[in-house]
Amino acid sequence: MAEQVVADKLKLSDAPKKLKSKVWQYFGFRDGSPTNKAKCKLCFTDVAYAKSGSTTNLLRYANITFIWQD
Image 1 (cartoon, rainbow, N blue to C red):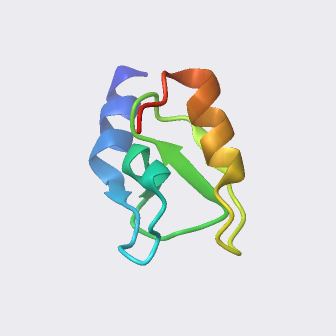
Image 2 (image 1 turned 120 degrees about the vertical axis):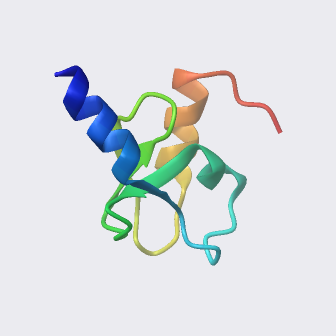
Image 3 (image 1 turned 180 degrees about the vertical axis):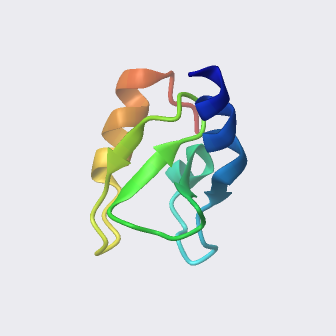
């Protein structure tokens, strides 16, 4: 189980530069390919987001999971 988490950490890539919201510093993508789910860099949980660019769900997750600081 621990090996799988380590493997997931190694495969997590940053969000593309065109995604400008500050929330993206806490999220990335698995295998470098953006899908409809981003992975939290702190707890490695998959969080759904809208491909239209809406980060509301990611912001909500960040506010609930850890202290949000600007």
